[in-house]
Image 1 (tube, protein in one colour):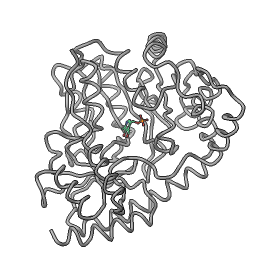
Image 2 (cartoon, protein in one colour; image 1 turned 180 degrees about the horizontal axis):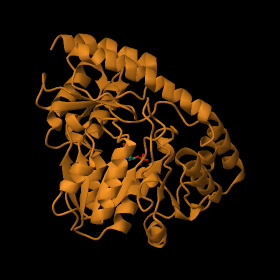
Image 3 (cartoon, rainbow, N blue to C red; image 1 turned 180 degrees about the vertical axis):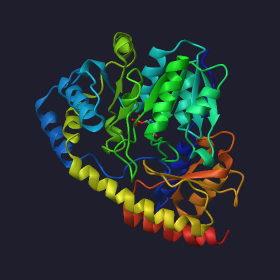
Image 4 (tube, rainbow, N blue to C red; image 1 turned 60 degrees about the vertical axis):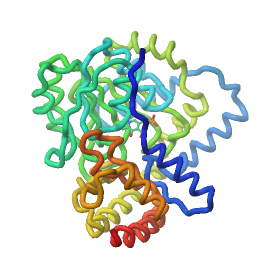
Length: 375
Ligand SMILES: Cc1ncc(COP(=O)(O)O)c(C=O)c1O
């Protein structure tokens, strides 16, 4: 029998937000990490062409795999043969594919707490055992090589995410190298979720492939490329894992949507438009980092990347879900409760997503300021 797993509570917040919207309320969606911009214009134009000209059967785009391979060379200086790249319906199936094909039932997989809600739950759903590493403000909510090394017995796997969800913090290059060294010494397989690459506000970003050529790399078009609903992502498998990944994807998922693959190829070269979104997020981040401390939300790790701010609300509540619901009812601002990301400490955190337009962020702040002021 499968294991029981927790629901994604932000979905309940989002449902309530949509109900309120239908009742005519103005809602600002800061609960999901979802760009409010659409796919790049050129990608949409390509999709229109394909709809009119292609019957669209099961298909795996060789040009897209070649383009992704080129991206690893250009961005990180690493060679990744296109044969190691599997195209998936987003990062979510890529994670399932990596876990299912690299580990055996009962294997222990280390994850950061707080961390993306689906890590803990997907690991459990696939009958592996999550080993949560508590990562506090002192380590900027990230797994360190020392913390991984300290696990006894060593886990079979570790999932790292840099930039991370829900905090946006990055693991610096020397720490990635140290994690790779610990993993190699102890036979720990690394899965690196690089879905927020492209969305950074200062520090250089590195792929785990620069330090561990045998890591599984998860990525997607949902964030930087602003194509969440097109359901397109990829998995890079180590050379010796390619055959098994191919067999698993063929049986579990078949192919990614062919329309999305055509559009995704074009999106990979829409840098000017996409980097424009990053500039909007940079501005939004600055606005929030300036305003939130004045609301009493001073304990936050300034995000190096992604589009989240994870804020300590313990001054106001011990029940982050109830707090998010009340905030939504009173102000129309939807946020995600920390309990999604951290079942132990998350009752005193909430996560703001700033993947909105700057006027929307300003509007949200105009509602948050009096609300927090009255608490
Ligand atoms: C860290 C992380 N990984 C994976 C995903 C899933 O993304 P996708 O839409 O590509 O399935 C998300 C979505 O928010 C995420 O935050």
